[in-house]
Length: 489
Image 1 (cartoon, rainbow, N blue to C red):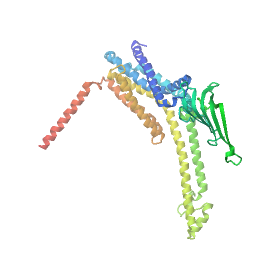
Image 2: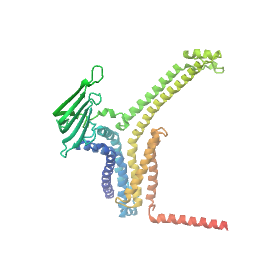
Image 3: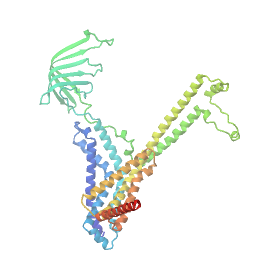
Image 4: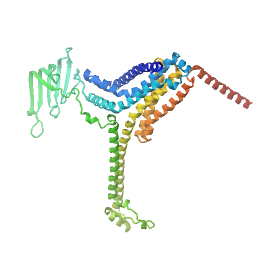
């Protein structure tokens, strides 16, 4: 490796590692803001948060790599151009294509690594991360009984505490409704005061009540109530035990999430697509045969010798009597209603079959889009490298100022195109291969154009260039104005 290659490699690796970490952190903060309300008050623990952040950091890597590549190349070539090192190398007769070669090889390695990462690591991280996120979202909030409000989170009970003392344990004026029998408010406990605490590793909540009463209305064998079946018990001290089994995070079987295309690699997506296509073909065949069997008069085959003759309808057995009525000229109201009902049922059946087939076809499109994204996300690293290296050579500004602004602008443009292409491809409005490759194709054209300008030392983003263009426009407008005045005269 020559010294010039080492110079570019060192100038590229540092910003790339740094920007990758920054971009992953930004996407992780975005994830935290999106689901912040699902984390509040659930006492998840550091281990759960650590796993969530680790999994979603891994999930954001494929999206972060193209943006990090663009930002790193902009900073690399911008810094070298700002310190006139790039200009000196060009003056020595070294073409720009030779200068970008070492960083291009690094970006190519990043793209190859991104492809294998998308195919193997990302599906695993998606499965782990989103299954854990689902369990977190379905976890109940920790026990938090507030003053003057009925607490309903303990299954089978409604609890109201009029006042809680600062120690968090002592309560005043406690009411407990027992609904475990599912018979309404038939079991009520009222106490003047009490204490609340947990035991057995917070698996049970104990209400130790003092100076209270318990009211129970019993049900007789006829499922009715009367005054003789009402029980009232006074107590000085009573303990009520509540199970907290429904609280805390519970892990769901991850196999329930494997159906989604985000959880599959290329081979699994290919298998799913092929299976869905076989199912669609089989469904079409079965549904067509069923329609032919039920409506044979609609599917009569015409023989060659009868092709020039008037075809005679060969009705199915269910409609023979109705056609006989029509031949005799007799059309009963019952016949017309039956024919109309049959047509409506046939239409409803066809619409239902088409809806099922359309949903299966959309599953194929979604899986195909995700399969192509394993490759397109990796290829976008090379496209962004081409854009970044050429822009850095033209702009000649390093640091985090101009490069960050330009990088974010191009990435937003790419992201919008990708979302639109994916949407239209998943809806079947455009071919999948067109929808997934449009963003890379457009940016590739821009990158090639900018690379040609950078090779020719074009001054696209300098003030003199814009001033020249503005002066030309001003002169053109003044000429048009003078011509209009001369014509008016």
